Image (cartoon, rainbow, N blue to C red; front, top):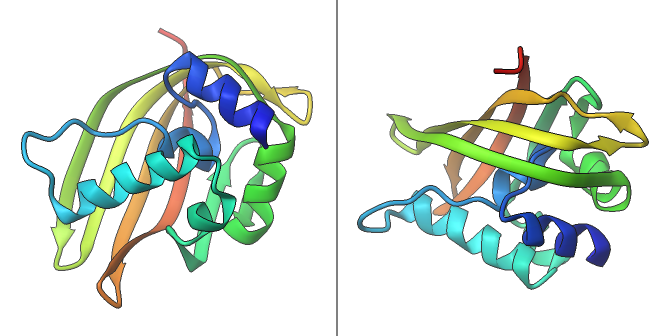
Length: 151
């Protein structure tokens, strides 16, 4: 886990799966509660606090990527920390949109080079997160990557 977090933090952004989405924060002029939750999970990754990181995911969270298929986060996160290798990453064009009371979607584009279980990651993806408010806390419910043609 330490090797992955150091490598990803060094690149300035994470590119694949849940981890990638979490380490790059949307810039806001004044923090909103959802933005604070995103910033808090970024800080948890910086501290390499796996137990805290897990608290930012809903128990019924799903991850959908071409390299993992559909997985519950309880299976995905440990696998990511052990087997994701990001060599470079660029995250851009963040959008954070309120869908309704207690629900936001966050989208952005990721260009990355790396592997997961030694398989090459898609070069460019559209990442989508769904954040929901449960018991007064913002948690991520869904993370999905859609592969795109390289630019």
